[in-house]
Length: 625
Image 1: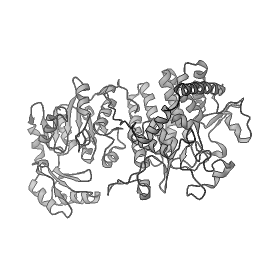
Image 2: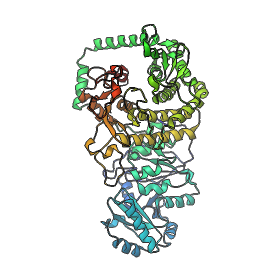
Image 3: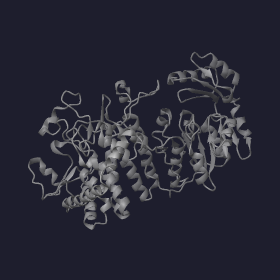
């Protein structure tokens, strides 16, 4: 993950965090939060409150045994009690609010007469203002009917259903949000002065408050994710306490060094070890000499592509063109952007640096009125072309330019250059965002509309979605560089929504809950559990192939964590995508007769099996890998 700007000033005075599966793992109680909070917590001005379904005594027990740090307040029982931890007493004024319209015996009688597998939770979860039950996999319609049953009994109460198993019946004023609002008024604070964090449906009342700031951890249940998807909420990349810490860094409460690494060491894994052993068996000097020679040759080749307009797609003097090959005598957005990114370590070479900058200028200054970056700009007449051969569109060209512009400015610190072109880049982001035609955070890509321009991917394509996620992060970071923290925050938060959608749609699993809404790919039981992000999904079908480039970028850009990346690289090494060297772009290849086979794959014999975009060997993909 890109580390947030620690210089963002905040006006947050109260933290209101759920406990189970937000700060700590519900089953193991493991968490880094206590350790990090004790080391990095603000010296003054920020109060810590736990807002939980647990009762006060249970929370105090977690504090006393060292699982959680000491708070200032405990809002317990899903918003039915407020406990002043410093004074060691219940805030009794809040109880007076809860008595209005509450009849505990009538609640118990109504629940007993409801037809369904509802079982009362143990007594330690019950008190005078809360009745809690187990009710597994209840549908929304069933919960609505329970609410209507209380309405018919003239009872104005709160029915809270969470994690597809917990049913809580509470007084009408009792929920996590109302209790938090009451506490804020008591402390003379506004909702905008509070930061909340949660993982499940019973936390939604906290996020419902106007002007509230929030953190949704990566392991959040679908009910809360959907509820907060379009809100100004930070969706963390990490689970539980690590996700909360990540959010606290984002909001400027904790310093960047508070970020906790949770990566697992897999160097002992058999397949990984085989690769390491193979490398170790080579002669070190011979290997280093070969690397150095390759590096020097690469710089020579790179300089052959320097032109007055930027990096060309090939060396002009070394390549005689025939027919459509003339397209290579252009500055291509995709190729140029990748070249800029890959050559940034050579920024001190004046000739290369000048070409890096000119490549970006050529592409951005030739963008269309609606913000589309050209596919390429021809060298001979400086004319932009917004498509390739046959009018095939190129959605990813603009995404690569946004990413490359950020990487360039991040290295050179040329804020004046950024300020000059930020308006153009914003228009490009709007043009790209318009391709999210159903507002699900993912782009809908026309067939063959990216770098595999004679290969039949379409709709939600892994490679494009990974780039889309990264471009939102990059654009947000550029806005931060210019001091526009509010708009930067919108893009960073939206990037987390994109990431969640990618993982939900492209990493299928058979481990689905009975009433959970699932994507099309997840409904294909024959797909099973994949150890990689699948190639594409559409409303009508999916491709279960492994897009090597897309999966490599997913790891490099932080879309998947180290654990998922380990599974993916183990799979790819196991099936031999790197043999022959460096790497093929897809596994397995598409063969005639396969449902994914398209007649145009035979055009110029380009996409026959193990050729070109159909499993061909790509040095630049290997370079990223």
